Image (tube, rainbow, N blue to C red; front, side, top):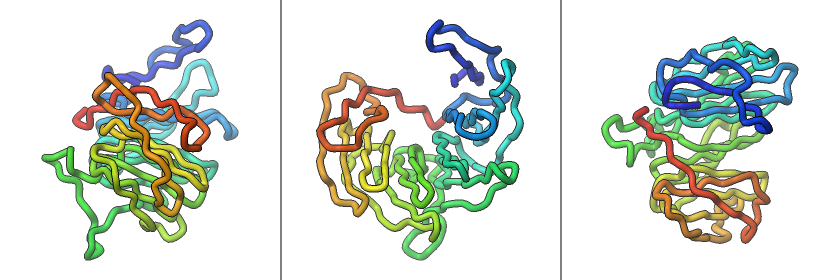
Length: 238
């Protein structure tokens, strides 16, 4: 995905593009997710223009089969399980879509303040808004993080936050989790290992020349095993 509003599919061995650029979004591409485990391989793309596209990539010429709308800010994270697609946005909302029902929106995860009111993203200050920019999910939980430096654990059955993990000093740019451990990377150039109860297991500070924080590669989620690499943080203004 690119700021030129296109998506390109590459052959990793030949390093050549295997299809014409995919053109549907009107703004820069800010999130990509490929799913090949279903009956048809699918590509999901999110944009700074608040939308999600679903592409059928089974044929040599991919085609856009769904356009998912509803976010009011850029979509910067996409995750999926066999039963749902989730889109995370700087509007503070994780939208949950059902691919078995034509990607119908089935519910939303919204952050609440102390009085039960929806937290609304601050349109003027992206450094302090609560927008979801990185998350991972399984069939029962979602773990999210974003510009407000807080990691949140959501229970999908209750559809609410069940724990908040604090400690990072800057944007949370990436995270991974399994049933027992969570690993978070931040613009503060630290990587933190947590257990699912919220206890901090370890903090490491790899040396980076890059100012945009860290990205977590697929890895064993055990303290002492992670080798993070620098990654550019998407510009939320698109």
